[in-house]
Image 1 (cartoon, helix red, strand yellow):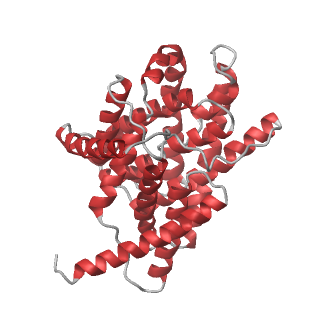
Image 2 (cartoon, one colour; image 1 turned 90 degrees about the horizontal axis):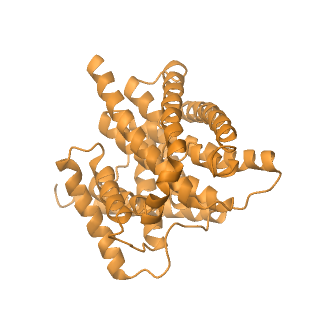
Amino acid sequence: MTSPMIPRILSQTALMLAIGLLGALLARVAGIPMPYLTGALASVGVFSIWRSATGRSELQFPKRPRQLFVGLIGVMIGASFTADLVARLPGIWPSLLVMTAFVLVAMGMGYALFRVLGGYDPVTAVYSAMPGGLVEAVTLGEEAGGNVRILALQHFARIVVVVVAVPTLYFIWSGHAVGSAAGQSFTQAGWTLFDVAELVLLAIAGMWLGPKLRLPAAHLVGPLLLSAGLHGAGLLHLAGPAWLLAVSQLVVGTALGTSFSGANRRDLLRAFGLGSLYVLLVLGVAFGIATGLAPILPFDFDTLFVSFAPGGVTEMGLIALSLGISPVVVTAHHIFRIGLTVTLAGVLSRRLRARA
């Protein structure tokens, strides 16, 4: 890389982060869950679309910083897998068993929807149908050879629809309004700089270990599994500060927003149309499962419905907190689903590429 390019890359990165921060702050004021991820993604996405529409060069976010912050998100997701959560797993195994069938049904419906109505290629359709978090789905899909722009648009649309639909359906079902979860966080009070250093080192170690084990999306899954193993065994009890999660989401949201370059109004309408239909189909299945399981399991309908809703760990945990539901059971379901969808999507995409 020539030295004149370095200031240009730094200035572009600073501009993208500033636009992402502006969008994140606006989303926070508006009370939107996960404002630093969704707000940055939306604002940088709009800016990227405008640049490409006016013939300007496409923005590219530096790869290494993005991977580091994806790794940090993996560590913080893994930190949710506490010893308390592990102790409760034996009591929820019937629900996790049903979750396995649910994931297969959701991915099957989604794949058919995105292939037939969306016209997506097989790999992009598989990862568009992942009923998990935005970062996980896009990261895995990118590595598998899917269309990153479509994946980012599709999962952004899914998250927007989920965070609107779940509280709305809850209000229709229960008659009780739901407050904003924008100010809630998984992170604990009393963090130290040593905790932050440990989180960063854990992310780096996981990013090194992931490729050695040939894990899919190694810079996400490696830190996630390493953190989950250490926290689940009770060997670590890290208190990550809220600002570190916010900064990580801001960086990843900004980086994903740059993938919107070249998108047009038709792409956006298609993503939100397909995303809305997919979410409604999957929520219908989740509603049926929650209704059927509530009378026979030690969890109420609300807990089960949020546990099976097609969002990621963070967004569904935030919604659970806003509903007054303990996030422990919800987190257990969503972490289990992430592991399952990562495995299934990896197997399916390899087979589809082999056929092609």
